[in-house]
Length: 171
Image (tube, rainbow, N blue to C red; front, side, top):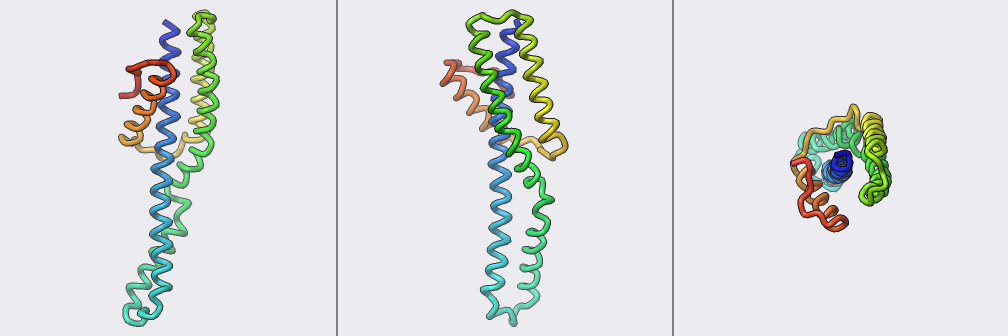
């Protein structure tokens, strides 16, 4: 019974790690697009100095919008997400190493039910502390794309390392 609960927790933790990783990629893409738009609008405004006299209002608006994007960038949710992901992903990855080691011991039946319960509690507390510390107040709307990618990577991982074809994940 507790062995199955530990396995489920293992799968959920791996899923979370991959979900956050994919969410980080999406946040980086969004910030990259914003940076590129700002860079191109600033550069094009400077490059178009020769025709500045013909359309001064258009170029002034383009430059103003670019500057507004640049100045408000730290306020975008993606900026805060990237900071959180920078810390939580490595912490969950490190925790997963411990979970894998404990799973190997549990799988060889070296742990009692009470020891497995203690490990479950320990790892859930650790994840709870990590999420409260790093992503507790950050806006993270659910992402189907991140979920789908994390799910597939989880299935691939458990199939590769544990020869499990179907994983009880977050469908």
